[in-house]
Image 1 (tube, helix red, strand yellow):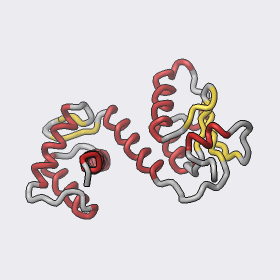
Image 2: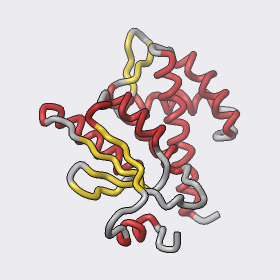
Image 3: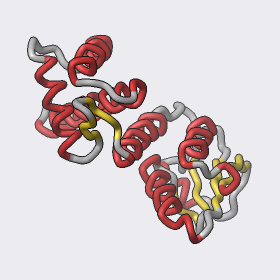
Image 4: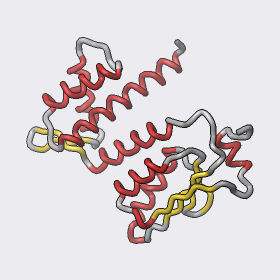
Length: 190
């Protein structure tokens, strides 16, 4: 295994550990590290992420890093997810869902249109960043496109960001001038 492959594997494991910890804290609300560790270690064992006699130390250090980066915070000797942590968790979940691409493209475009009011500009920017993270391509002002089914993911985003009426998801059979977009997604022969 080359240096780049090892680094990629290490980053992937670190992101998976981060996601497990953030999900555990999210589900439990306020939770102590002593409760987080066994839950996370159990999940890690099931996923085969870390095989080490020092797993609890690894989880504790990871929690400390998440606190230092502002994703978790201490509240009455227990951990709580911060708004920044919620956003990071959504991003990790979105990446995971987007990575689950089907083998073959069904020749349909998923078009997302949103019209979020100016007074919610921060939310609009958050939606844009999330769509970029997932892999959507910016087609026009507030119009984004993706070649694979992502309806469940968009439903989650609408619910999490409270923008249900401000966002429209469409499945389009044909799109004029889609050659550059096909090229971007590697679908020239698809």
